[in-house]
Image: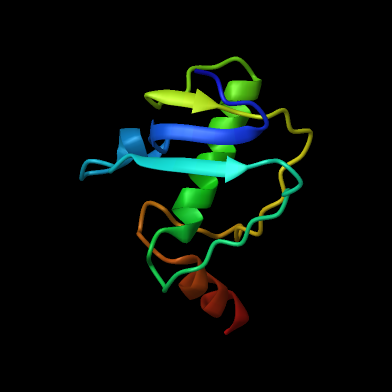
Length: 108
């Protein structure tokens, strides 16, 4: 059953980390209602995967809109014409450095 007007991802995987990570990436589910809600805040403690989760959703949305394979059991995306996210330019997935740590290094 196709869900309209929402972002619904079942067992989605980060397309980059799924390939380069030494340990297996744990897939996750996403459900974001789109009816009158275009803004979401993701919170959590440091190093809990907020940036990875947000990046995954953005990358999967871009892949789906460009007609590419989406690494998920099921994925339904609403049409978007822009994605806004504050993700530091110096994020280091390879060294497992958090965005907060990278921002503190930039400020020092």
